[in-house]
Image (tube, rainbow, N blue to C red):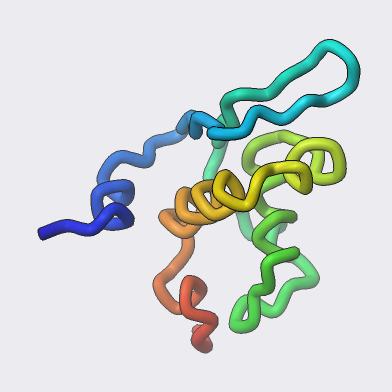
Length: 104
């Protein structure tokens, strides 16, 4: 039996839209209901990071890059539930060692 993560690995194709359970209000008139993953992470997205010790802030930084959403006004305002779903999508593009924090 496949778990949710295994099923998602087969489904994630760029662009990938993640429906947010808690829409994010940006400014007066903009509400973001869908987070679109526009590309896979690239080498430069990991600059200044220790890949064997990725932290939550590192993941949020990469999410900002691959969704083309500003970290301060969008990514940091995601609900915790939406944040963990977004990280689950991001994990589909990382080697297994990065998901667990193991050495490469």
